[in-house]
Each structure stands twice: as C-alpha cells, then as structure tokens.
Amino acid sequence: MIASFWPFLIPVFILLALLLLLVSLNLLARVKGGKYVRPIGQVLMKVPILNRQLQKASRATLERQNPDLASAITKLERSGVQNDPQRAQAALSRLSAAERRAWLDAAGEQGAIPEAQNRAMRRQQAKLKKRR
Image (tube, rainbow, N blue to C red):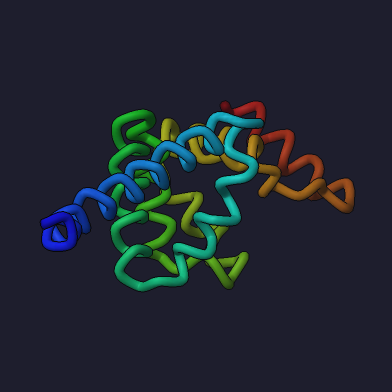
C-alpha cells in the first residue's frame, strides 16, 4: 500500500526542490547587492535558451525603470559598438540628449568610461559632462 503511494509524490518533491532553489537564489540576491548571484547568472547566460529569456527580462525591467537608457542601449547595440570605439563615438553622437545623459550616467556608475589619458581627451570628457 505505501509502496504504491511514493510515485505520486515525485512531482511534489520536484516542486519543493524548485521552491528551495528559488528561495536560496532570492536570499543570495539580497546579500551584498547580489554579489554572490552574479557568477551564477553568468553561468546561466551560457545556456542559449536561458540567455534569451534573461536578456528579454532584463530589457523589460530596464524599459520600465529607465526608458531613455533602454532606448540608448538598443540604438548602440544595433550600430555594433561593442568592438569599435570609433563606431561607438559616432553612435553616441546620434543619441538624443536624454538618451546620451542616461547612457553616460549608467556608464559612469559601471566604470565603463575610462579616465582620459591626455589633456585633449580630458577636455572632451569635460565638455560631455558639461552638456549634461
């Protein structure tokens, strides 16, 4: 009688395991600003199906929180700025003022904007900051 009851509990055990996994990820995300979840997310991004879903969720969240930044990132990705700094500069000039301001703020927070190495570059960065 009891032996025939265990196969019916398998879905319950699977659901409990998934719930435990989600609770543990939630707790890790709350510790030190998600410091311990980032490596797990990077591993999950290597799975193609999960990568697409995570990118879609990230983009939707960004569009809700900061539509100007989402628009700027979409335009920059479309122009292929990841590998070519000259193309990135040209793409930045095509952004609207609000989009450029949002992108520069986000890039400054992430540390993506390197420090200028010579006086001309420092002046150019100062102009960009002044425009904001």
